[in-house]
Amino acid sequence: MSNLEIVFKEISKNKIKLAASPNGATFEENFKQYLRKYGFNEISKNTMDDELKLFLTKIKKDILNKDDTMLLSNSLYKRALRKDFADFYIWQPYGSQEFPDFLVFSQNSVFAIETKFSKEKQSKPMWNSNIPKKNSIYIFANHEFLDLTYFLGHDVISEDERTKLLALWEQTDKEYTKWADDFNKKIKNGAITNDYGFTTYIRRAYDQGKKHNKNAILDFFKNKNRADLENNVISFIGLHS
Image 1 (cartoon, rainbow, N blue to C red):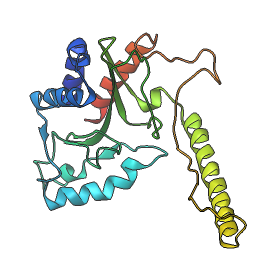
Image 2: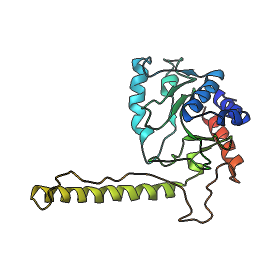
Image 3: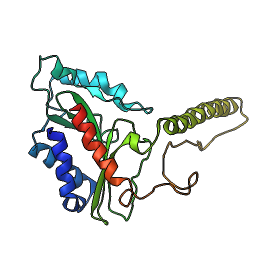
Image 4: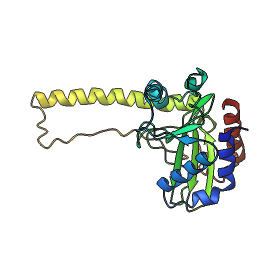
């Protein structure tokens, strides 16, 4: 069994303790403790060497791709030039506002892990501008419920569903660009003064609800498929570590 499999089995055993974290920042720090306990060293963005910095730059486009997240190979380790480039993690590799919260490097793969934490009585994560990504791992904990669960992106949204939702935003962005160009022309020709600079913007966001499916699963803790989703994460890690 790989070290990362053990980490997820252990956080399942201690889900009440982890979910009792007072806030999201503390929850992430507590998750780090499990990573370190089971063999993963933390490498800081400020202390990493040039080879690792270059690797992070090369994979950034794939990791941040809105369409999906590939499960990336840990080529640094596989080249046999850097045997120390396995069993470590980087926290917030692309900044605090960017996906993911953790990149965890095993011998074979680079796992993208996103943590979701809520202090309110909230049974589903907040997704904001990132829809669940296919090969990424999500950990969701709730302070009020003292519960924690985890799942893979492709287990909660199908490829076709993701494609259609993303296509809507592509179309929306094009329409907004056309509107903005027309608005600017009218300002230039004096049809609109825009003295106080009023404008608008479109905020990309995703949510879960029953608008399209009255039977949609909106409670990740009472989800009848919960055990399967969690087991799938363990199997996924075991297969690719």
